[in-house]
Figure (spheres, rainbow, N blue to C red):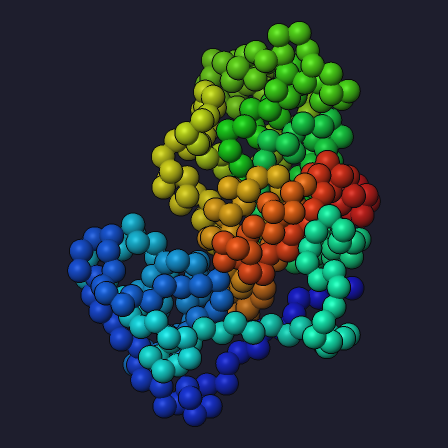
Length: 363
């Protein structure tokens, strides 16, 4: 049975913690800028000693700034700093400046073999992912049973196959999706599938191109914009299937962020980058599992906002699980190169991934 590993809290009775100085707090000189030698946060739990007490940054993200306010540590993006905010300065992580980064904080099973040399340790197209599928299935069951918050980051390829769309709709209908993060293209091509049976003009069942199919996604965008909203379009055109249809039907939030190359875009797409980023983070703040599929940029963006841990309402701390699914080894593993060291890459196409997950869940 799946179980959440126990959080190992630092032993603050140790001499290094007892003798550590208080963290240095320096006011931000102007809006949107930190003082020199500011501390930048990582994906790990970080503690800061203030007035003799070690405080955990409960809601963190990488590459941001810890601010002391009202007896707590808040982690803020530079754009959200205000003149006078008390910013933690210091770039050590070992208590020597009142800052401690707690990297190895969850219980892990003992390794079966401690050999220093071994074959096939990278995650590539040769890796066997059967165990990962089992883990994800058990994890999703656990999350649904224990009110976890599962955030999915979807690229447009998730909508290119009729069976994959059906599988994902079942995940939504059965409570395995708490929120979807995507771009204009995912919603456009998924709704194109429900409207015209194609994605980018190619049939989602037999993958045959339709005559003048290159107009289909534009006709879809135009129709949705004519209705004024995705929901009105779904109701007005009697759309009966797909990912976005399942979200609307089951009140599952979807966040669509724009890019410089968007067609349209759809009415619900956030056109202002930072409003979109704040909306993504509003879901990441609750996330206990994140699964990115076939979208490198959106998944990395989400990864940059996702710490390795989550402080729950009862004060307990648990890990945040992160998976990246892509056909490219480079894409599946790129998240680690961008600082999300706990993310696991799965090298496969999203259609097979979704079908395997749905089979494992029995839906």
